[in-house]
Length: 278
Image (tube, rainbow, N blue to C red; front, side, top):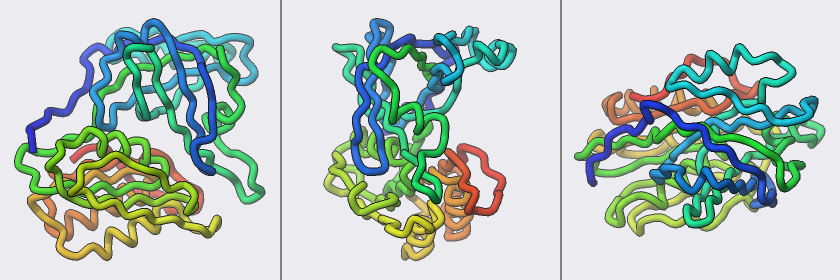
């Protein structure tokens, strides 16, 4: 496998755009497509390239983009008055068409016990109208296999599916390995472009009361023969990320060969300490 260096921009750039369309991709995933002249220059790197998404709160009359100055963007952002400070969340580039300045954002539609949408981004994605203004702050890539990785193991819940899809699409053709991809429903499965040697296993929960990430974690713990010469990427609900890393390291995989990140935390799972990277 070719050597890749973790890519994090030294001076993250902010890209202004507007909503082009919002469509239901699967029962649990909404795709928001955005477009903008500035996106013609977006330095898309494939894999799990991610960004910080900014859009206006429902109570704000218009979108006020944050001021970005190098890596200290968060200081002026937090100093913005509440009446103008935009919503901020982290997302993966689900698709990019440079020639048209178009970028896709796949948003999980989290729902409560009553079936109502939960979370600011899910509510926004399901109802946003074309023309709505927003901004994206480039943050680079997390996926970072060592040059001698013999195989790749990807483990994720639905929040990590956009990252998994992007990684599979970007892997060299000869890559071998396994994907453990949890989703809420059987109908959330979808076609993924992947090297022939990557085996994708879908893990639908079906039961709405099941703890997100638990099925993927159980499947990981049942994996026989964790390859210590491989590379693992474990993302999604925080318990899945933290406990997945703990299991892999206990099974003999060096910490520097594991990238893990807790994208969100469900109230159904116990709190655990999580950090990204090795």
